[in-house]
View 1 (cartoon, rainbow, N blue to C red):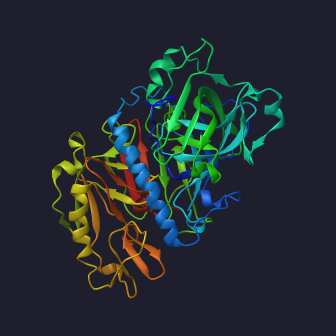
View 2 (cartoon, rainbow, N blue to C red):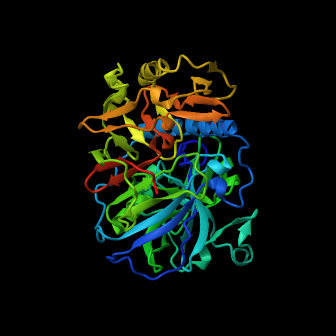
View 3 (cartoon, rainbow, N blue to C red):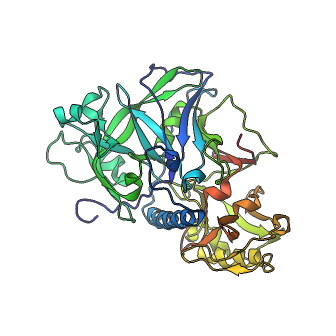
Length: 476
């Protein structure tokens, strides 16, 4: 740790969420209803005013954020902590939270957001939804007296006024939770008095960061039948000092959905069904085309376009990320010659799914062989070089025939295979120009299935059974 605290290379999922939740009934009991929360792409938010003007600008920004995120993943692996072993009691198989998802295409980015209601009475905020981060935190003021009552917004942004919440409970700096359990979340060592809250200091690799302290709070969520419920004892961060482009563009903090003991995912799956799922619409869809992020079960049926396949969900392999065991990649039904170490997490490789990274990233040993196999089918198209575009292979797409492109498939160790749509790995970047939507990572490093390659599939993460289910879907 340098300066005030440790270097926290925790980047957030580019997915932003508007969790519109109200103060509600205290009923996290078994229920046959689902719980519904709205997720909106960050560029769909009316207060955002910095959307990229073109698809090309959008791709450049996506790649910039993805490279920051890859650095975070590499760093996080070096600081690996054991994931939670005890996930508590699942409260019924028929209950669930549903969060409505919108694409960011209309506003320039592949990110999503939702509103988040926290405190008693509840206060609403816009948080980045991040499957690579374990901590949920927000713009917050505590023990600021009358200023908390007078200033509901600072710099045109909402502020969580912790003094006005009867359920706000700071974590003491002398507690075991601060010194041991929260050490992986970059808790600070400073503890001037026994009653001083446990502090944290995040420093992101893009220069953004947040300084604050931990507390336990109540989060309010809506059931699909119109009723409401509350989740108690949710760990949150209260931050009165932060900086960064994401927070300048409408986000009030981060919603941590990684596989960590104190993440919102862990808390929500304890309440609702022990699993979560999502179905990402095409990343170029307008914002009125929606799908859902679900914790637990939902009465709504997402349309399937084939049978559901399953593979083992590796929760202990590259924590806190969601990892899968890959044995290879095929292009046109022929396995690509990739060194085995690229898929072996014990040798520095492996593969994770990350809904916060837009482009798919392959570690250096896997990248070149896979790209060579895909490029061979595109040689008849004029190659194009675009300044600032991260993808290596782009071409004039006039007369492009996707049926002539060999199918790419990712093969898992237990026989399942994931076959993304061609549009998910040959993507539009400008008028008349397409690119192979795969970028090279470093080594050693995890490969990452990004959210564009995941689109138009329903993904279900069974945290109890440790299974990953996936099937093609229209996400409608």
